[in-house]
Amino acid sequence: MPRSLLLTFLFVVTSPLLLAQADLEARLDAVKEFSRYFKKAKDEPSQVAAIETLNDNECVPAAEALLELLDHKSQAVADAALQVLGTFKEPETFAAWVTALPDVKDSDQAAVLIKVLGQSKQAAAVPAIEQVAMAGNASSTIKYEAAHALLHIGDAGQAGLLGQLVTDSEPMVRMAAADAIAVLKARQFADGVTALLADDNWQVQTAAIEACAQIRPQAAVQPLIDLMRKTGRLRTECADALFRITTLDFGVDPERWQEQWTKLMSIEGWRIPTDEELAQKIATRKKYDAFYGKKDQTNAFAGIPTTSTNVLFVIDVSGSMDDLVLEVDKFREYRDRKRFTIVQTELLNTIESLTADTNFNIVAFATDLKVWKPRLVPANIVNRDAAAQFVKRLKPIGGSEAQDLASAGLGGAANLEQGKTNTLKALLYAFGVDPEKPPKAAITGFDKKALKQPLDTMYFLSDGRPSVGKLIDPEEILAEVRKYNESYRLVIHAIAIGDFEKGFLQSLAQENNGVFVDLGR
Image (cartoon, rainbow, N blue to C red; front, side, top):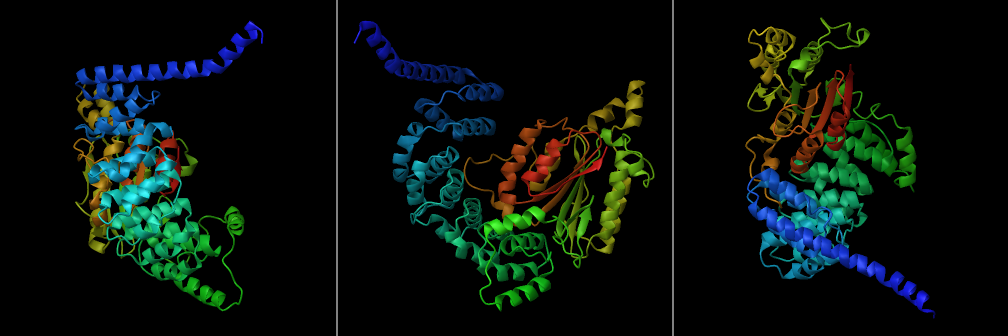
């Protein structure tokens, strides 16, 4: 071979190796510089910014450095480290952790490793995760994280872990297992999730309903009809699951379902429709025609019905709610065209029509919160009247009148500061969290307080982009709600009014199994 061709051949073969080596050296150098800077960085924003520099520098030392930060005293630092670790995907980065996992003695450390391996979608870790979670001494936290890890990896495993976890003594573990079975459509665990329809905890039941809707076992039909006979939000979810299993549609009327199901069971050869037949039915189905049941009385706000009997109304009273709507013809029936007048009228009508078995509360928010009652109360005649009086006394804070005073230098400016939009604080109220004084959340595990929370549905109405509070970026607010609602399982309906960019509220509803309504501009 001529010398020139040989040199060309060697360059082609070795250049990728040289580039890979140079890239690794650059990544190692980035980790070195990160460690140097992080040691001297004292404020939280600088520490978080330093962690983010490792985003594109995946390597074993980077992963080890981030792992050490998961128990950092700062929640923001720990969250940032976990987020960056979640972007690491190379099996070589985690190979040593996968090997070591079964021998980790500390339960919390094992749970952290399982969470990280799941978040990074390490398929090779599935056998080790199953081994650790199925051990007799496995903690609830390990089992909870193992179920979520299988979900994220997209592998139900081979040892039957999820089937074991649906019978666990800890409700949150059962719920996590049902969630994984639903996402993975793991039909082999149909009996386990069907049994969970009779669980004592409503959050577990709602996870089981969704799992049954996804894997579509015929054996779940009768338990779903029986569960629908109870009051509350789950009636709607049972109706949807029954539709997705049978392709029939009788809303939330259990007696019609029972009558039809009894007939079907008497027909020789009748079968559950195929997934393809269901897809065709969904394509032609009008979402709300029979979904909520024409014979069943429901609560509704801003045109969104619900069978829930534990409801929180959260309404915006920031200064911009004093502005006029632009669509004159659409809002002629109201006493004036102020956004708040329209919202106030709708809420008063809703309060008056609440069913007797409903428990409810109201939160008005601007820069801060104004809470009507410290807890949910029955919608009896006395409480409905008291709630109406509360709503009638509300008015936008720092509205047009205050703005006029402020511009004239007459003291209205102080009120303007109280009339901003603290969206995060309003949303997290439902989870019992003040974002200015948040509890130190563990990297792994779950919030047991969620199981004691009767609230299951929230209506959230706003006209403006978040403008004040610990977080004002819509994506960051959605992430916070997502974090808490993983355990609480609230349905969040979102209602917009005004000229607001509505994508945030649409995402809020979509991510939390709610309905989005645009009242208008």
